[in-house]
Length: 465
Ligand SMILES: Cc1cc2nc3c(=O)[nH]c(=O)nc-3n(C[C@H](O)[C@H](O)[C@H](O)COP(=O)(O)OP(=O)(O)OC[C@H]3O[C@@H](n4cnc5c(N)ncnc54)[C@H](O)[C@@H]3O)c2cc1C
Image 1 (cartoon, rainbow, N blue to C red):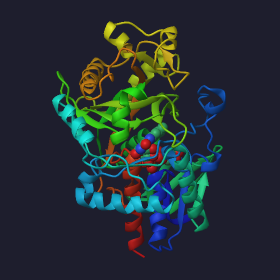
Image 2 (cartoon, rainbow, N blue to C red; image 1 turned 90 degrees about the vertical axis):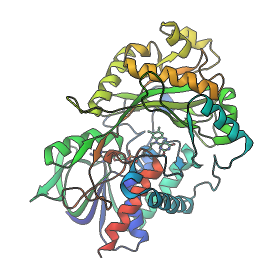
Image 3 (spheres, rainbow, N blue to C red; image 1 turned 120 degrees about the vertical axis):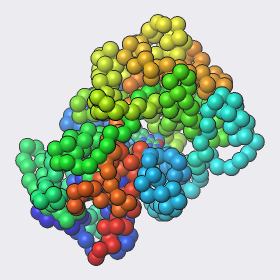
Image 4 (cartoon, protein in one colour; image 1 turned 30 degrees about the vertical axis):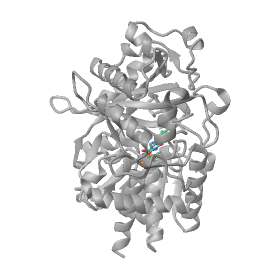
């Protein structure tokens, strides 16, 4: 098989590459290889069974058309300050321009026209003042919220548009390796049901997301793709009653707060806030279960969840941040017997584990019912745990009640986008014909920034016709 452009991974980064090529009027042949299913065939059995079935060969939450975007909350962050380090590579003004451009594409495919978290009203000023007093920075970020069910509709429309306009999408194919000849990437090897075949291409775009980040890291070592270790985020998913977060939810929808708590002064931040949302689980190929969260546009719970993440960097003698985070996750999973673990904040401060019957009598009922009550501190590195405790106590000054005794902390919350591929502004790697996009490239960590990277790639690939 031969094509002009081969895209590995049908997440936002991959699909916006193809979409933008069509919008630019490109006549190049485009093939997308995706190990998961078409979006209408993606179903998480937990909706019926109530518990994670650890689906094989992959988890439907992160795999299939639109990648981790399909079951995400669909919050599009509309500021260049949020969603990854891409602005460092392409420039802040250009990044903002491309976010505005990409946002219009989302609107064309049916995104809600309402934007949350804008304005400088008195209530935002009060929140900011409390943040300043607590030593935290409130980052301004307008947000367009798709909602999980609407995100799926929108990505379904994009999928049909691509197929109707000649983009070939090979579902159920796993890309296992790159084909390299004379320091040039000339395509990939794919596999389905044990049968391998090659697809040759002038341009190969790898956009395999967080779940493909460690695979890409291995390819970097094997094929000499220039990269550098990046940051890995380790943290917890926090869940409180909506009453606690009411003002912040209403005024900002998402409170993006950043702090550098003592004694370590590492960067700690809030991430992915879901008012009235659900705590969720995603499983990686190596059986690692990690916690996440999302919210529907219509179906709401009594709780709000958000992540608190601590950034970790490594230099010498150890420089494998993904492996480090995996070990933390494995240890936590082991203590939770393969499940996500949950503990009350008050129990952490009291130095005791949480028991299942204690959860049952709390005001805050877990929205992840198969999470197992236990002791997350037995697996969380000391430095990360202290960072989280001190950050939550600062947050309590901004949102009174946030660090309440009943507040739930789920673990492990890990973000695997740490290996950063070295590229120029056109996303050329040191291997001719190879480009790396989205979360697996280490330059993005969100829907909008991954989509923007795809759009820019699509424009470059359309130019040389
Ligand atoms: C539950 C949840 C909620 C989220 N909520 C938000 C949110 O509200 N806002 C936000 O900005 N971000 C959110 N995110 C993060 C966001 O979804 C990701 O940042 C974004 O999807 C990254 O896009 P991507 O294209 O880089 O990768 P992905 O979306 O991860 O897509 C990568 C694709 O590549 C495929 N793939 C991987 N390896 C291979 C291979 N070897 N061969 C073939 N195919 C392969 C995968 O199956 C996948 O479909 C959420 C994520 C989750 C899981």
